[in-house]
Image (cartoon, rainbow, N blue to C red; front, side, top):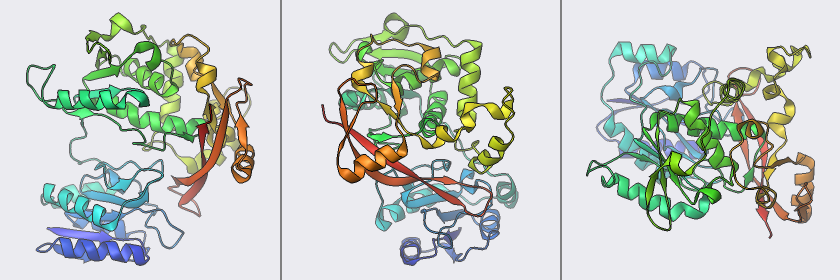
Length: 407
């Protein structure tokens, strides 16, 4: 097999390339250095496997180019020693760290070796089509039979359920493929994110829910409904026309019920469905176009046109939302779709970035903006990144903070 390796243009990239070289004897290995924008196209079209190092770095070092979405191809192995930009979601997942963590060269090399072993030789036409239409001839995308939704405090129970389903329990001995995102599996659990970055993560989760045939909820229901994130996951099911069968596990009794017996019915009206579609379209890794935001803002008329949508507001991309558990806990848990898409419940409080910077620098406590008495310690996290398919710079850093309740 021909394996092309495209490392970052620095010492760390060279170390990864050398490790891959040593770990894949017997293959036709080619090193593709430099920043030629057509080098990725040529490799995607010619190689059976492409190791594409997408570790974010400064201009001239990283390997992001104007080629659209090469990581959608099944034979492109996208890796990163740190975490990927929020709008980069490879077809083959698992080759990058999760914010704010990192992965070693040895870990990445082991993953690459395993992936190369699962690939066969690609025909010339498949490679050529993949170079001009990324993802058109990729492998299967379905990842799970069941999706498990839970709150962080119930992770141990959710993990036990995952193992049971994997062994075929609850399905007459037929093992199930299970999608369970571990705490911090997409981002730091304490990160406070602007609206569109939050919806970016939900759009990724929505894809996983759409692929599953069962949607499992780990109760208790009143506790489960108290989180913005679990409500977002719950809304994804009717958004995809309720294709996933709903199940609820009682963590105390172990009883399993049909979801409709315990959870409130969630129906999406035409307005809410349209709103969710706009949010998903403009935040999904494969559809968002951050390089067009400035242009969309210039096209605003103030008369309700396409460009007047709040998804293009600067605040939607820059002002983080703080979910205060104390505020949300004062209202009986329920699902109000209209209030949810308007960020009215569960409560999300906008906090200006300069206020977060000030509290982080001073080590002072940020009081809940709603005056509930709860306070938060603010600490900086590594920045998030947006990949721009066009423009003078391919990567745009976004400042991210963590908020930890002191109550």
